[in-house]
Image (cartoon, rainbow, N blue to C red; front, side, top):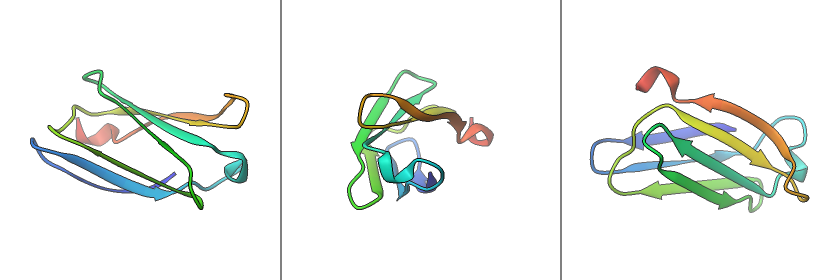
Length: 82
């Protein structure tokens, strides 16, 4: 993922292009934050968008899922923000 994000205590908004090996097979991106908040978006035209209120606690676990529910990538993001 190539994320751009905005956040404060009232909101979290992010989006970006799904890139890298297997990006053309990606169907869903899931974010699970340290406070338990879960966000997911389908990959449409290679892009995902996320928005939630109130804000979230960092870091987040990012999982990029393929067509057969296979995890194409799984990693921590926003680690320096917590």
